[in-house]
Amino acid sequence: MQTRSRSRRVEQAPPTPPRRLLVYAAIGALACVWIRGYEKQLKSMDDVPEVAQDVLRRFGWTDEVEYHFEKKRRPSADVSGTAKHPLVMVPGIISCGLELWRPGDCFGDDFFRTRLWGGIGMGRAILRNFSCWLSHMTLDADTGLDQAGREVRAAEGYAACDFFAPGYWLWAKIFREAAAVGYDRNSMYVACYDWRLSYPNLERRDRYFTRLKHEIELLVKHNDEKVVLVGHSMGATLSFYFLTWCEQVDPGFAERHVHAFVSLGGSLLGAIGPLGNMLSGEMQATAALGPINDLIDTYGKELTREMRREVGRKMGGLGSLLPKGGDAVWGEDVITLSNNETLGLDAIVPDLLAVLGPHTGGYDLDARLPTPPREVDPLDAASANPLSTALPPGIGTVYCLYGVGIATEKSYRYSGAPGDHSELGTIDRSGDDGGVGTGDGDGTVPLESLGFPCAALWRGELADHYNPSGSRVVLREHGDEPERFNPRGGPKTARHVEILGNSEVITTILKIATGDDRSVREDRVVSDILDVSSRIVRRLGAALDL
Figure 1: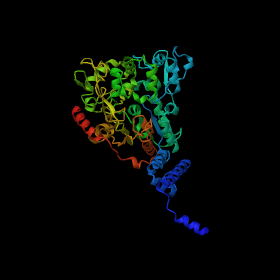
Figure 2: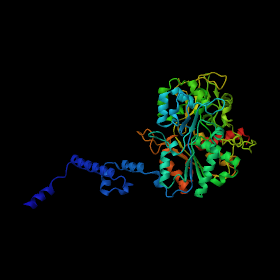
Figure 3: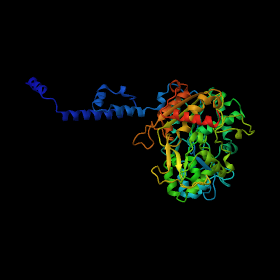
Figure 4: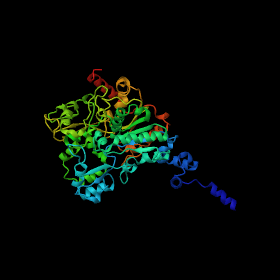
C-alpha cells in the first residue's frame, strides 16, 4: 500500500514552469544570501559551490556576482612583491590641508591650527566669517606670501591629504593598499606643501625642497633602495621642478636616489583651466573641488568674478599651471573674441604675465632647447617646464599614468573685443557649448599635458635634447569606466581626482614600487595621443628650427 502510494507520487507530472521558477528564485535568493554572508571567505566564483553557480547561471546573475568579487578585490591582492623601493608622494593643488598658525583679529586665537582648507575646520571657518576666511587664504600681491599678521601653513603627514573632508577620500586608498604590501612610516613619505605659493617661495619660506631632499636621502639610506617619486596633478610639475633644483645643488642626485618618477594625472604642460581663472575668474574645472564648491557658493555670494580672478592672480601655485609651450602645443585658437578673432597663447600670455607682478617667481612657459643654466641661484636655474629643461639624468624609468575619454577645457569664447589681452571680459555662454570648447583629457588636464612628454618629448626625435641620459619612458592610459550610481565613479573611473582610487592605477604604482613591474613596462594607449604628439613635434620642430 505504501509502495503504491510512493509510485503514484513518482508518476505525477513535473511542477509547472511557474512553480519551477519560484523554486529556482528561492534557491537563487538563498545562494545570494549565502554568498553575501561568506563574502570575506569567497575570493572568486571558483569558491562558490557548483550548485549555487548553476542557479546563478540559470538566472543570468553570473556577471553581476563576478563584478561583485572584482569590486571587492583589493588592488594590493594583484601585487606579488612586498615593499622594496621607498614611496615618496607629492599631492596636487588643493589636495593638502592648510592650517592657520597665526590668526587675524577677525578669527582670534580660538582658530589656532584650525584647518582653513579641508576638513570640518574649513566649514566652520567659512560659516563663521567668509570674508575673514578669504582674506587669510589670499596672498600678498607684492610678496606672494601671507598677508601681514597672518600665517597659514601646510598640514603635514598622511592626515594632511588622505581625506579632503569626512567621506571624501583623496590619497587614503593608496596609503591603505601600500600598507597592505608592507609599507609604513619608515618606507613611505607624503610631501604636502602650501599649494598657494610659487615654487621658489616654497623653498624660501618653508625650505620645502631642502626638507624633501633630506627625507629622500634618509629613506634611501634606511631602506638601501632608491625611491619611487609619485606626483599627482600639480605634484608632478612640482616634482619635476624639485628634480631640476636638486641637479643644481647636488649634481647626480636623481641618479643616486630616484628609481622611478611617476606622473599620475600630471599637469606637466599646464592646463587651460587656470588660464580662464586668471583672465576672467571663471574656471569650469573647479568642479574638482567637489562638494566644497556648494559651501563656497552658498556663503560666498560676495565673492565676485573679479575677486576670484584677483585671488587666483596672487597665487603663484595656480600660475605654475598656466599652459606651457605656446601655440606650438595648444594651437592658435585658444581664445575666440566677440568679433570671431582667434588668439593663441603666444598673443595672450605676455600681457597676462605683465599684470601678475613680482610674486610669480618668474614663470617659465616657453618652448626652447635646453641649455646649461647661467643663473647662480638654484631656484632660478630650476624649472617646472619640460619644454625648456632636460629631464634630469639618471632617473631609471619615467611613467605617465593618466585618464582619458573625458571632456576637458581646451578653449574659450570671450565677450571682449581686441585690445589688452589680459582683459577679455567674461566667457560668452550664449552658445551651445557655453563658451567653453573641450577636448580629450581627464576632465581637468588636457591630453596634451598629460601625455605628450612621455609620448614624444622624452623619446623619439626630441629625446636627444630633452632626455639626453636615455631614461626609460612608459606611457599607460586609462579609459574612464565610471559606475552609473557611484558619485566618485568607482574603481575604474579615470577622472582627474578620482584616479587616485582607480584599482588598476594603484596596482601599477605598487608593482613599480615593489619591483614587480614586468607587466607594466609596456605602453598602453587608448587615445589619439600619438597623432596629437606627432602634430606637436612638427610645430615644435618649426618653432625651434630643428
